[in-house]
Image 1 (cartoon, rainbow, N blue to C red):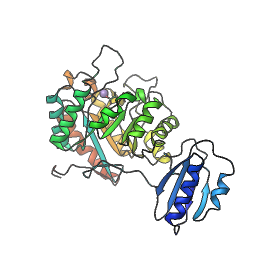
Image 2: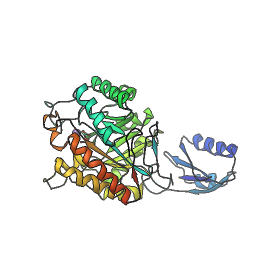
Image 3: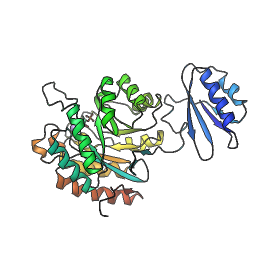
Image 4: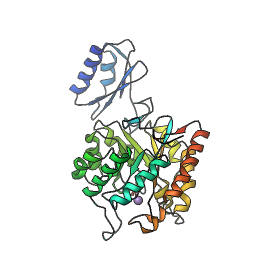
Length: 347
Ligand code: PEP
Ligand code: MN
């Protein structure tokens, strides 16, 4: 349910409505619009007479029921697009397209720090790198754990890049939060509801990847789990889905970008690397995603992709990545957006 306050209403009247909402054990999420405050009410059960009760409270303009299953992630609750502010002028979801790049796994200091410098020089604002790796086989490299997080933090200190890294289990959320700027929830964990709630409580931005066979509505409801804990900074990442086609690792669902944006105010990121699975297709999928309106691109980059401990086949080397970012910029400009460039990189 949405309670729209009158534009000339007072703080006192707003507080009274919020207190009333809480008295029913419901959550009140405040959204400041253009001169107007909207209160998004979620929780169960919503008594049937609630609309009328709130409709006659002082300062209330209208009360609307939202019939969609997802609430906080949808436009009804939040009519402005979400822009995530990572600090130091780095944002996601604004006018410009953000580029995140880095190795699939943090393997060593040298590998990660050299990659951080290279991707920064090429136009990335955010460094990716997995310290806790979900691997299909238990015998594959599963990441450096906390040492990996320390290396990422060192790379941030040296380059000014923000960092994004995966958290796989609720019990690691606190530790990962000490280091990261953005939590990545991987495809395999996208419906791990206890993990989603835990990152929802941690109050740091979250990038939620699409599950291997996830419907768009299921994906939005997974994001709803994070937001229902009070964390507004969620972005969605299309990384390809399972289909019958095996010429690529996954099938890149480019239509997910405009579809999500028609349903939700959350920023949408595309991951051409895990979609393609092969580096020769990464450029085309990146550009398609940006042309479709994605707010960001996350790309795997490695100093020596053929030696990588995970996902080498889909990783670009420094040179290949440096040739991709000007193309992303050109497509972003063609649709009236720019590329977010770190301060120290010449135009
Ligand atoms: C990754 O980003 O390296 C990764 C494991 O991605 P996904 O969860 O999309 O498979
Ligand atoms: Mn990977």
